Image (cartoon, rainbow, N blue to C red; front, side, top):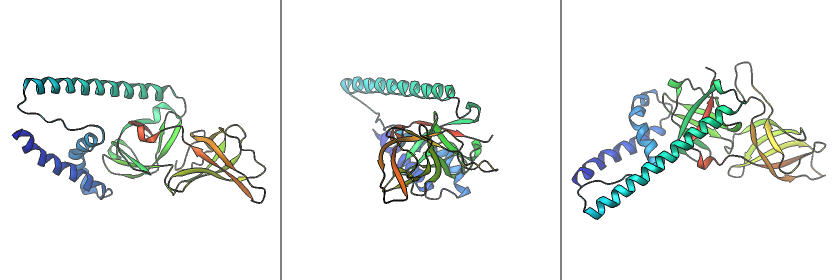
Length: 252
């Protein structure tokens, strides 16, 4: 137990340092330290610390049992990651050769952190997907970590279209992360469960979204004869809180 007590303060310092770096995300001086703290950050996101030391036979047996459970859980997570890779590269849109896999190492309401950065060829504005589902775009990047803005971010705004009825509108986020499909003229038809797709608004520099990425499905419609436009509430097809791996559409 003495060894654990000795290691714990060092670990806590590194853990605090890793969170400290996030507040200075754009500072180039943090790049070297991120190499050290990134494994700590990944651990803090997905694992729990197991104490070691002198144990009774019963405690030793329990520890070995726990270690087996952890090994099994890690194997199952590896299988999930392998399946995610397989599923992603079976998807024809976007093109597999333009995708970079990245592990999720942090999650907040409006963004996630991934373990890839500018040293891996990532840039601000790069689109992040899972299969053909739109997750968000990279809004901050350092050498080894990138921050991905989710669709729930209040600044979200891009053109889109309903798959079945071809209604045109704008995707935005309101009320603490609710995603809506708005500015749809009354003459266009909206249907429950219709899929909303990106319309494609990339400029000559490659900034923006490619067409036909899935934003989500319509779960409710707000249409009033007295209004100039109608709107719909959208639900993503992906539970971001359960994501372990995403894919970045690179320009490499």
